[in-house]
Amino acid sequence: EDLIRCVDRLRQVYGKDLDGMGIHLPMIVAVGKESSGKSSVMEMIAGQPFFPRDEGVCTRLPFRLQFRCAPQETPRVTFQDLPGQPCTKPEQVQQRILDVTKQRTNNEDVSSDEVVLNIENCDVPELTLVDLPGLIGSQFEGEKRGLKQKVLDLVKKYINQPHAIVLAVAPANVRLRDNDILGMVKEAGAEDRTIGLLTKCDLANERNRLEDILNGKLSEADRKDQERIGYIHLKRGYYGMICRDTLREDRPAESSQTQDAIEQAKVREKRSFDDMKLEPVARGRCGVSNVDKALTDMFREYIHAVWTPDTLDKLDARIKGAKSELKSMRFSDRYEEPPSA
Image (cartoon, rainbow, N blue to C red):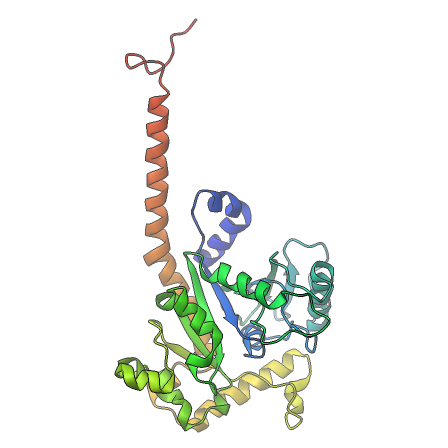
């Protein structure tokens, strides 16, 4: 946990300086189409519903969600760079998100300025995720022209960053090949640093081959079989979740914007996956708790195995360059320093 907090602290204090040096900090970026369930995934991880509902494009700017395990029983959310007291109720967080969204986008545009939320609770993972606006299928009349392209450009900007680990969120009842976000991952050559997260697993049928996707069986299939069902191979594989659906009238316990509604959704998620009777490998990649652990473990592993060696190499090269430049600025070959007066 100290490692993840250290990366976040480096970003807060030295982020712009490091970017200027060509040193990019690692991060996990959640991307997906609108209505893919991406924001619901963030709420399941946080254990509370902090995103407003029924507001058109739900996410209009990047939200950096810094989940922190803390001893207090009451969840607390602070907006890192914004004035105001910590929020202890979901409706307070929702209102502040509505306010900052209105201020920066007028609810008709998107902004690239990040909003950082520190989310403290006793049962959240030590994890940081960036939740991006969802890819838009079609624009509403009241939205700014070019909004669809602006969202696309913003998502591509994050995906293409060298140390961005991509959490590609897609509904399980749609062919992977037909999902725009996985196409973007493939186009960016980011398959090796992408985790697929399939939502709405309870809506998948036999044709969707959910179990074979989760347990990796399809990754070993021949190319023709993969192409026939629209499978896209990701080195780190796929995970599954079932989030709450607030529009279902037969699930009133999950429809309210309360912490208890999220807990009810977690109970139903576990029961639903148990009822599917998936084989052990596939079942071990399902549910919010397994997703939490996979993301946390993978992020730590990536920092140790990939980001740290790459960063040390870059720093070493810059130090050698600085020494060489300093040497060339000596007073003469005979004297390292100019003679004193």
